Image 1 (tube, rainbow, N blue to C red):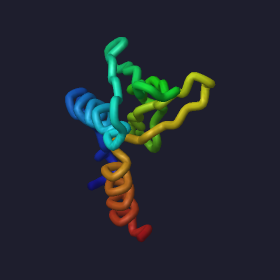
Image 2: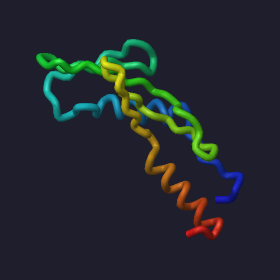
Image 3: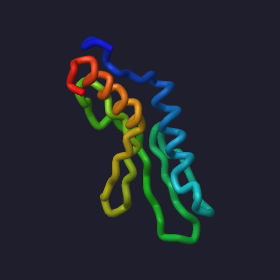
Length: 104
């Protein structure tokens, strides 16, 4: 890759990765209810437990020109966690960029 090669993802790739994250969230838990509230916003509850979060698809900013698409998990108390959807791809791209510049 050269300096002009930025890492980008199509809308289809982003939505597919996000939906995979939502579908796998709490996959080992029983009685998980997933409900799409709005496009790109899901509510996740566990029947019989006091568990309720929302998961939103969000670009939390650019990192050296690469969009950081995340699944943002929000708890009712306001706490949130960001899960980078393309972490592996971004790490590989960054390693290639460092190598092409002789930094590794």
